[in-house]
Image (cartoon, rainbow, N blue to C red; front, side, top):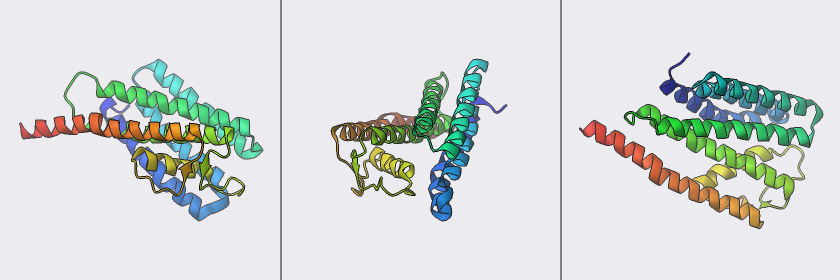
Length: 218
């Protein structure tokens, strides 16, 4: 079993691979988007379980959540049921939220701030973007007109990856403007994410990097 401080390195690699390879594979393979998303999510969830090994209880909960998400996505790939999609995304959202909570606990553990804690901080940042993308997906199902710049009437349009893209563009306050929030709830979610992303980078990551640099200088 890997040491606690190393597990966030595995999670970071899994998240980066998911964010880079998922959309690229979808672009290349097209109609196999559901299978690609399933494989990518399964990989991240399995890797993410390593971050839930603080206790047997947390590990068991994380494992059950990962298995449930995988089963729901598999069932949805055969039945194309919106309820299954909603349940799968809710399960994945809770799994990511648990990973964020554990990463925060690791950051504020006693002991010096080192590169492993910085890795955990980066994992939190990426997980925040993914959590908001799931919230945007729920909003689209509730309010199909919530965003402009996406084509909901196109059957093979990868709406999920559109929302992942929009989430990280918003989190970093890049704001290209190709996808824009069009309803009150969409705008509230968007500016809340933007503020969260900026405060997180300025306060938490800045503090971690500053402490590490100070240790090297000493």
